[in-house]
Amino acid sequence: MRPRGEVEVDDVGVHAFEAPTDGPGGSEEDGTLRWDSTTLVLVEVSAGGQTGIGYTYGDVSVAAFVESKLASAVRGADALAPPAAWERMFAGIRNAGRPGVGAMAVSAVDVALWDLKAKLLGLPLFKALPAFHDRVPVYGSGGFTNYPLDRLADQLSGWVGQGIPRVKLKVSRRPEEDPRRLAAVRDAIGDAELYADANGALTRKDALYWARRFAEEWDVRWFEEPVSSDDVVGLRLVRDEGPGRLEVAAGEYGFVLKDFADLLDGPAVDCLQADVTRCGGITGLLQVAGLSAARQIDLSAHCAPAVSAHAFCAVDRLRHLEYFHDHVRVEGLLFDGTLTPEDGALVPASDRPGLGLDVKWSDAEPYRTHGRR
Image (cartoon, rainbow, N blue to C red):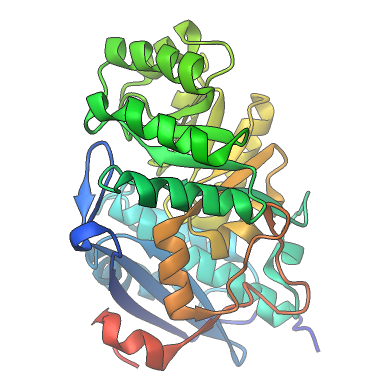
């Protein structure tokens, strides 16, 4: 029986789990950061005998933010109207800070509310959304800058062997090593599409230099954050002056709608990115999707595949989803019901309500850093 009228949220729970990386020496690195673990902040929202889950990837402080600023705003809210709760949450954190931790906290709660709504309706989440698609193409993503050549080539060629026709590696931490790394990868993956991600490591002129080399020597088709996403002028420069077949992408660090509007002004990117666990959750993503459609620029999903596979079905100008090594590992450790690519895409299950995920609480417990069950 599907509920009628308002169903009030009666409980909010918050947890955090930290899983070590499996990189060389226990760490992974990209153009601008080295890390040895990944933290997932998990939110539970309950109403009408059902519990929805949502999450974000960030510091454990996001969990404390949910508890101190958002839980009270959500309790008593209508579980069938996530956007109304979303508006209340963002209004409530005006003075605490909306970008960054604030937006990530709202994102986790908002995803949980949408998961809850879909469960109350007895629908898979993507069917509770204004869906344009029933599957989301993916690209394999990893290729960290501290991987030895054999592991780098094996990882990316492994995705190609699984039917994923596009793969990405990290670049620009030690640019002098990149030609050798790119040559090894190109040899391993054959004619598959090759993407590169500098994570904002380069200056504008260096980015232009490498953009030309990437495209001409290794047929790289996608250059993500060649300069910092904060440098909109620099992104636009690389987009406008770089090789015609090399697309510039950015947007994974967009937290509020203006962040995305700024990238589309000009525009500064060929393909916009959004992270549903950072941009205000599914409610925020729907706004970004409308903006990208209005500007006639495709939108690509940044990571969090178990959520993004549902959420991005509601994106009209959908390009693809980053099937990121770390997040695939963490979600597999913590959840039952995660998806495996089929013919290069993630296909949300039609026979499981909500996100289709169940937390493996006993398996997750060794990784817990916040909350209790």
